[in-house]
Length: 117
Image 1: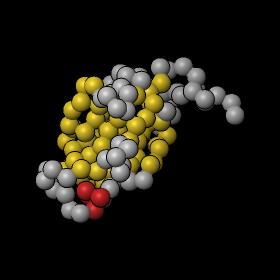
Image 2: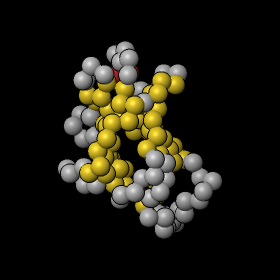
Image 3: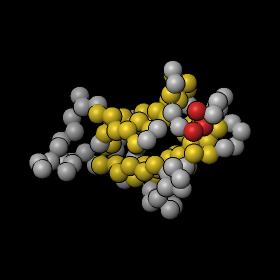
Image 4: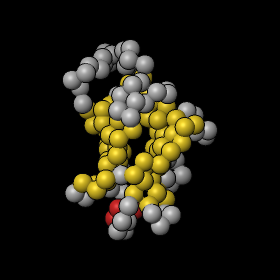
């Protein structure tokens, strides 16, 4: 398989279950769109938050909650200027219910802008 170079015009979407992430691969400095239609959405949540952090999957840093906007069936939020080598997230609703991908969360490698294999 030959390496893939991400260009500014590339906007691939990666779907993992009820989650879509764009662009992929993620490069440091990107603003990342996360869309969600999982169990919280399917059970009528009136508000969903993207719970996001950076770093190793067992030690997140710069953790914050980003309110998501309802767009059709999906909830959507943007993570501005991703700066670390790993993006981690899960979801919670306004009633305190969580969707953490059965304890695995969602985690994506963030590249430095070089060649991606």
